[in-house]
Amino acid sequence: MATREAALADPAVDAVLIASSTDTHAELIEAAARAGKAIFCEKPIDLDRHRVEACLATVATAGVKLMVGFNRRFDPNFAKLRTALAAGRVGRLEMLAITSRDPSPPPLAYIKVSGGLFRDMMIHDFDMARFLLAEEPVEILASASCLVDAAIGAAGDVDSAVVTLKTASGVLCQISNSRRTSYGYDQRIEAHGSLGTLRAGNVAEGTLEFADADGIVGEKPLHFFLERYAEAYRIELDRLITAVESGAELPTTGDDALRALVLADASLESVRTGRAVKV
Image 1 (cartoon, rainbow, N blue to C red):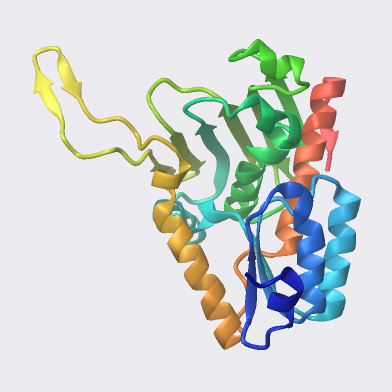
Image 2 (cartoon, one colour):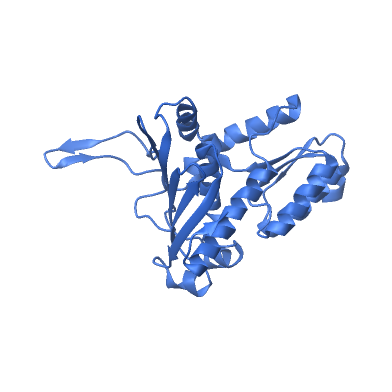
């Protein structure tokens, strides 16, 4: 098996995909950048903002492409919602609601090293909020609890959180996260504006329904992220390959990763102080 150094030195290697543990991301990005390779890295780049900034400076100096894995942008339903928003379908956007709830908590060992719910789980939703709002949040108010598993709280994390973001123009965005749902992976977005509302709902296991005098029963949402976002992962990698081959702009960048981390850090500060935080 080739070593990392040998792989990075191989002129036949055009791009590097990093999907290792979070604490290795920044180092691997820098090594690949110095080797002149295009880079795809799963979120986050690092849990520390200053380490992310230093890593991005290395990438900029090397002049290589860095794409960060915010795969939900590539979900066909969410992408359609964004296109409709940009086309003015709901008029002026006023309120955005993002729901993201896991079917069950991850192992406690993962909780202890993940960086916490805001930096590990909700960071996807912070990126989605930026993707859909078309302007940066300037204020954030967060509230969190440990309602699912007391062991998560003992490990220093939370398992249930609600965050409200506010933009300079006054648009409001609410993000709801939970580490538990009894019915599957809950992934929904609603955008409300002056002319109407757009909704992108859950993707179900199938379309079978049973109807009788008591009501209509359908199938559950897909179980977890591998099933729910399978198509998004494929589209994401296709976009990476296209950008590397054609020189096109990347759809997600290191700056997107940094800005999502800033929102996560601000949420933690808001939870700690009980006050809204300026971003």
